[in-house]
Length: 505
Image (cartoon, rainbow, N blue to C red; front, top):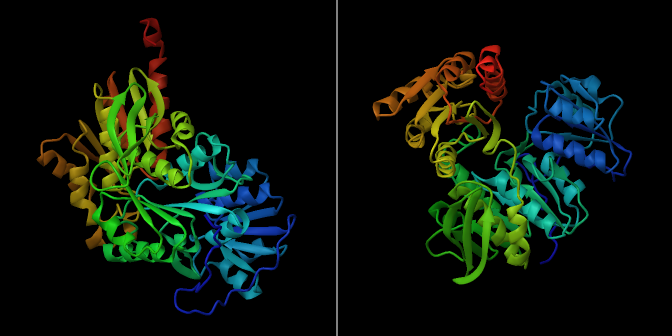
C-alpha cells in the first residue's frame, strides 16, 4: 500500500480560499496552546504533543476530573475559562477544538492577533500521522471499540502503532499513543471540525484502510435529517484514494449505498449474506464468545473474544478484516484478540457487591441500547437485568427517537429512566419525554419507572436491587456520578455493623 497524505481544501464551509494564517515550521520546545483542551480528543492531542517535546498549554470552560487530573499528571497547565490573557505569552500555534464557537473571546483574540491555528484533525495529521499510513474507523456505532482493537492487534503483532481513540483503551491505559511503527489508527468522527471548518472531522483523513461500521441518524444538533448523514459518509468514501481499501459492514443497505461512492475497492464483512469476510459459528462460552471467520468463502481462522454480544463480534470481525487486507496472519491475530481488554465504560464492571453486579456502559443511541442489552443478556442469562438510562446527547434529548427507545429495552426486566438533562436547550415541541417512555414501556407489559433526577433514581434503585441482579447503567455522560455512588452505597451497606454481626459480607 502506498503512503497517503491528508487532503487539503476549503476550511470554512463556504469558500475554496484558505484564509487561515499558515503555521510556521514547528520544532520541539515550541509552544502550542489548545482551546477546549478538556475534550477527549483534545486531551489526547495534548498528551501526544507533550510526549514529542512541545511546550503545551490549554484552556477550557469547565475544568474538572478526570481530564483535569490527566492533564495535570502530564504537567500541562490549564486555564479555567476563556479570554485573551490565555494567549500570553503568545504561543507559536493554537489548536481549536470543535467545542469553541466563533464568538468565544479567546477565539476572537486568536483571530485578531493573526496567530497560526489548526483544527484537531489537522493537528493529528501534522503531529501524529505525518508520513505514516492510517487506518481510519468511521460509522455511527462501534468506532471506539474497533479503533482500540485495531491498535491493540497491531501492537501485539509487533507494529508499534500510533493511535487516537475516543475512550480509554484498557490494554494501553490511555486514549492515545505516538508509537514509532508504520501505522496510525484513528477514530473518524462525523461531527463538524471547528467554527472555521464545518466539514466532518473524518474529511481530513486519507486512509490506507477505512472501516465503515454503520450508518444511522445521529448528531441531530448538526444534521437535520438522515440524508445529511448519508451525504457526509458518501463524501468521505468518495475522497478515499483508489489505491486504498475500504472494509464495510455489508448487512446494512445504507452502508452499501454509501460505499457505492468509493473509488477504492470495498470488502464487506458480516454475519450473513453476500460478504467477503464472514463470522459464523458464534458460540457463547465462559468469559466471552468464539467464532470462525471465512474469507471469500474459504476458512480463514478461529477466534475467541472476551467481549460480549453479536455487535462486538462484528467489531472484532471489522478489525480482523482490515488487518487481513493488510496481510496480517490469523495465526498472529487470534492470540492477540484473546488478550483484548476492551475500552473503559463499554460493558465495564464497576463493582460486585452483595451479589449485585453493576455495569457501566456508554450506550445512548437506541440501536446501541438494544445491542448492549442483548449482549448482557447473552453473557448473564441467569441474572435479573435492571436497565438504568439517561438520555443525555443532543439527539437522545429529541423526540425523533421516542418510539425507537420504547423498542430498545425489550430484553430488560426492569427499566429506570431519568429525565433528560438540559432539556431547555431543545425546542419544546421537539423534546424527548422520559415520562412518556416509561409509560410506553409499561403499556407494552414491561416494568418501567420515571425519575425527575438522579438522587431519586438512586434511592429507588437501592431499594429495589437484590442478590443476583445485574444493574446496567447507560449514559454517554457521568450520570451525576450514579455508578460510583451506587457502588459506594452498596459496599457501605454490605459492611454495616448489623450485617457484620450477622456474618454477612
